[in-house]
Figure 1 (tube, rainbow, N blue to C red):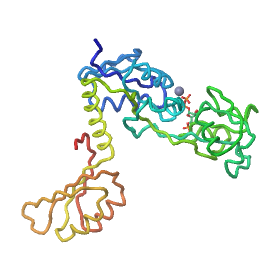
Figure 2 (spheres, helix red, strand yellow):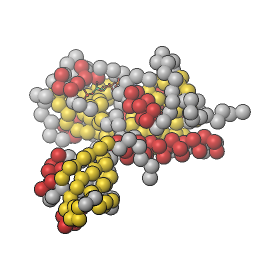
Figure 3 (cartoon, rainbow, N blue to C red):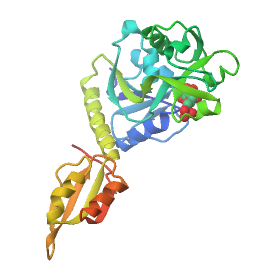
Figure 4 (cartoon, protein in one colour):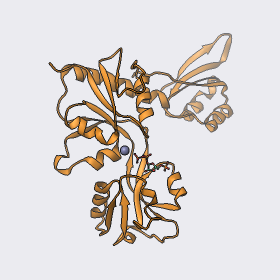
Length: 294
Ligand code: PRP
Ligand code: ZN
């Protein structure tokens, strides 16, 4: 009999691993913390985690070793075989691990547009995505596939340009390269195979997705409280960022002032608070929201 536990593949070490585990923990999964282990079992939900190399995640799902995986869109698209394009389904974009796959050239090189790449050698660990990009732009160039340290290829005269992941841009800076063309924007996504899950697994997935949505919403959201003159409320409402209808509560022994409570679904910046204050608000508190279920 097939196990009813949902198996999720995660990156063991690298740019997504800490955030992936932390997201699942914030979704309430109690994990046994044996760091050396490649296998975690949640104590309070029928979910198991398999920690692997990110490049192996699509194959593990394709082979039905795992039901789901958390992976960068860069890895997913690199491995997506056009003939089996519909093997994977993106279940949810997770909002972390944001980076881009970009073409970069040595700083001193003139680059006007993609045609500057014609007949050039480009080193990359993402040959499929790059070839597709070149084809779409009708550029004939040579793609040199190397598996790591792509950024040193121009210095070693292995290539004229590179196509690699950029997040802070520090790696490019350190290697005297400049980013000239974004090829793909990427972030962490949860994927599954297109085939249907069993009834039990699907139920677990629904719970998990609802909690992930709650965690992601809560992360952005703030609970704002303040006092304000009744007469200022219309103007103040216009200033509140991404908020729903506020709760207005009367204050004891005070007829002209009210307390306002509101959940903002966006970050709240200092200048918003300053404008609220100018509009008459006082005693303004901004609190983080821990959990949210809509
Ligand atoms: C990528 C890329 C660069 C670095 C860029 O490697 O190959 O080395 O990140 O990031 P930065 O713009 O913040 O400097 P990654 O750590 O993802 O390792 P991998 O490509 O070997 O998986
Ligand atoms: Zn990798």
